[in-house]
Amino acid sequence: MLGMLSQSMLNLVDAAMVGRLGETALAGVGLGGYAMFMMTALVFGLSSSVQSQTAQRQGAGASLTSPLYAGLWLGLLSGMLVTLLAWWQAPWLMQWLSPAPDVHDVAIDYFRWRVLALTAIALTLCFRGYWNGRQHTQLYLRIIVAVHLLNVLLSAGLIFGLAGFPRLGATGAGVGTTLSIMVGLLLWVWVTLRRDAYARWRQLRPDSQILRATARLALPHSAQQLWFAAGYAVLFWLLSQLGTASVAVGHVLINLSLLLILPGVGVGVAAMSLVGEALGRDAEQEAHRWGMDALWVAWLLLAVLALPMLWVPEWVLALFFSSPELIDLGTLPLQLTGLMMIIDAAALVLAQALMGAGAQRTVMIVTLGMQWLVFLPLAWWVGLKLGHGLLGIWLMQLLYRLINSTGFLWIWQRRQWASSPA
Image 1 (cartoon, rainbow, N blue to C red):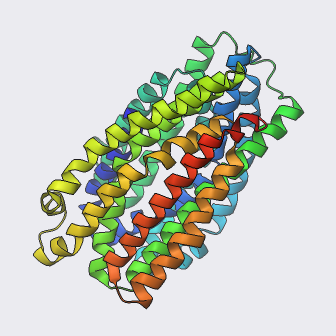
Image 2 (tube, rainbow, N blue to C red):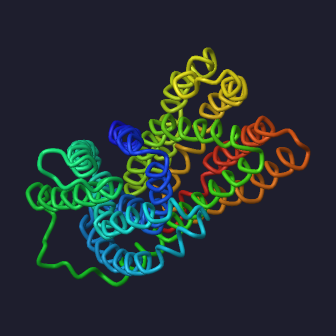
Image 3 (cartoon, one colour):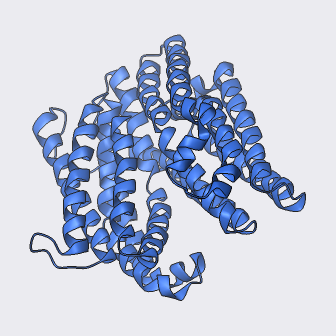
């Protein structure tokens, strides 16, 4: 949880630094960063795939490093291919995301520097999944905090030309982030070589069966993340049809929710390892109990974090807006956002727990089906067609979260995931 929260705080720090260069620079970095998020989604499933297999193998007393080797090979291959394609098609991608020409140059330069780190990100995700699967989550916290601190120092120096660094402007943020991610990968390799008695680096060639299993488990989660990101693009398009004020308020609401649900995601990641390890020992009842216990913890955490949104929404919005009109527009939707966070706990935790049981395909179908077949059509119909605007869209999002979490809770209680192939 702390590692994930530190990552979100870094995004706020980066935005504050680039924001000093003006609106064009901030918009370009935001556009390039969103494009990079979509690229990262393509390899994100490697983390959950390696983690769930490692946890189950630890419970079964089998070799632990085979999923790691398979993930590293897949990450190296997919990362390099996507990097080459994204670098080549960067101008087209930026034009597709936004037609504003003054932002394109900044976005293209920033994105091209960021995408150079995609292979390092893919390999890092494999190491993170491996050590999380062995329940050594403190390693992720230590390394990610070190990487983020380095990122702040490098980006500040390269953006503003401090401490003898060249002044690169917004591009410096991309260069600093890429360099820090590569240093982070070196730290993961060093830690694994130093601490892991299981690692036999002379036998890096993975078993073909494990390679196929790793790819099979990774693809649904990567596809889910990619379509999840695309769904947010459609949501922003809907908000743009309502006007600039709705876009501004919606942007703040979404980023607040994405930041504050991270403790729930962190509990879910812990549940993924605990469920996988229990199933590796054929302890189905214990695996089920881990999922429910983690859910209660997440509910408590998210309820506490949601209290300011529910009780003093005007104070929260005043941190971002000085306009009384924008604060009034966002007050009730922010309260709905706080309620959504609490309701969403079941989906956040049990989706991760199901992936620990090897049910990635089920998670993908439910998550994307609810987002694309329920929420987005209802948001368009109520918000735009019926004219209820931002509040209507947020009410539909509340309904979607309720149905989604209820669905995951029902799936978990049925326990068919216990027989899912690992």
